[in-house]
Image 1 (tube, one colour):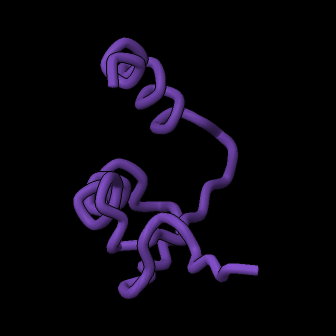
Image 2 (cartoon, rainbow, N blue to C red):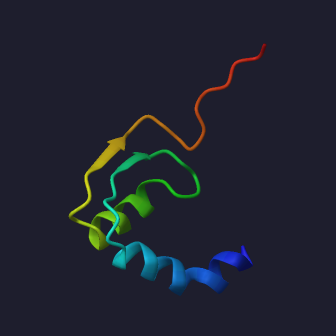
Length: 65
């Protein structure tokens, strides 16, 4: 994903330096940005409330109509 590499410094800087209150509810089973990213968030924003959803991925369950 070239966009992530191109913008990483800007996005991380905004995340770390914002004055906007942040809180997270994180799906730990997300295959792209799950538990490993949760660790980074906790390291970089230890002040932000964080709820780990251990049995949740990225997308909610979808049911056929």
